[in-house]
Image (cartoon, rainbow, N blue to C red; front, side):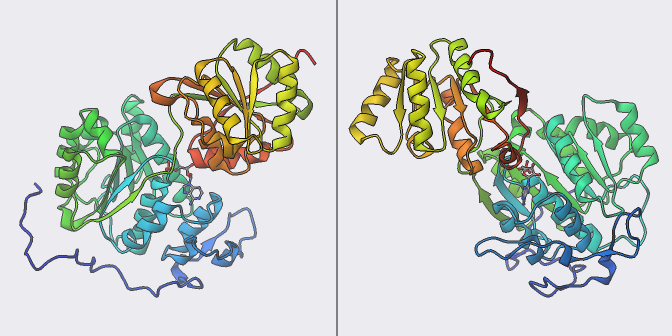
Length: 445
Ligand code: AMP
């Protein structure tokens, strides 16, 4: 059993590097790991070997490329296949340390790229240090614990993608899903990386269907939610089954760090490096998001019907250009919809008046541009419409953040036509979820 309170000699202020980790040259963008040679798909040209040259990403000041880190080519190939080019902030901050074997305590939420951050570190380690002999097929090398089924499955999905060019196998042991199927997977498959929710994992670990005594890398994701959901006793029991913290790498993530989580984080990690990436603004779970795919000439009729259907709800419509806001405002006015413009070309005193009118309900619809829209801090905005998708995905987050404030629910409807639908994947990547799409045609002109 792990003695979590073990004294550490006072002169030891840094976690000793794990002795089994070889020193690699820094910034070896042209590194050639002969052992990393990656075969392309067997149906393609068998003799073609994937190399880092196939992952063509320009050097950009202030951005870290995955090439710039000591990541094995087989993982880089998966990263390239997933369409990632530059590290997200948490990846750029954590990977240089985690790839050296350091423990980390990370403050980060979903949407920051934390999943790939810990998976890339874990998978790289397992490839760089292959086991000479696996104890048994049900001994896990990597263990990731997450509080909910959805999160665990999302992590498992990303783990499968990142291990696609390796021999490593991912098994998910998740509550609320078919127990027998998971039991069969443990019996029939080699278990390298386990992604699990606490209760189900404990069941399998106690009955020794999965063995945790050789875990090399442990990830605790969304620790604060595990606490609030009452999983900490289970997690403690699980951690006691893994090797001592000196002998494993531990990465703990949490969006918030109340006192209890701070204490547990310290207890479970060994000379951890601390990092914090707080997203500038992330989307709010109280906002129902939908994309209306429309032909460009259907945008206006669909919008008009949407506003009319919604009655007197407080609505903000975002457009990308001032002339679009003017045009929309004119059309809304002609349709007898109570509206006003909020864009950079409106004088400041007029803007203040407009906002006041919007707040007290004398104005129902605001037509705004991004810059002016950022200043809108009005509660009870029921609907945000993106009449055109913003070119910068961050603006999407800002825009829809005007609704669903202060615990209220809100709705955002984004119009995507043939001109701007290509912007959707970037937005979905940033917010870390896919947005429901509906095809719409206006019934009136
Ligand atoms: P996460 O915060 O781990 O839930 O990740 C949010 C989303 O960002 C997921 O869809 C990831 O696949 C994606 N993602 C993670 N890292 C990167 C990256 N470096 N570049 C682009 N997308 C990424």
